[in-house]
Length: 75
Ligand code: FES
Image (tube, rainbow, N blue to C red):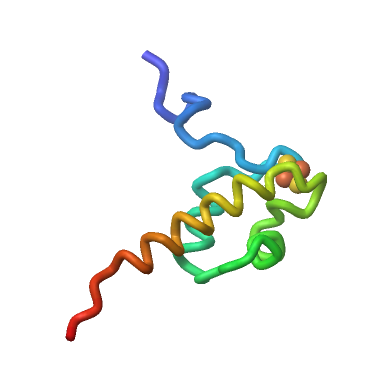
């Protein structure tokens, strides 16, 4: 049996240049409240190389923005 940590699809690399995983960026957004690609780059390094991953980072940031706006505000 292969341990779950050997499953390459479990936590895919989001930024190949800096070897930053998707979960690292998701955690960074959740913990720091980062709202821009530049903030993610400063905090994780992701996106500070060839820039090819910027679209994936923006998708994660947009997902957070959508989920924040979907939260019901009590009257
Ligand atoms: S893949 Fe992220 S900077 Fe190159």
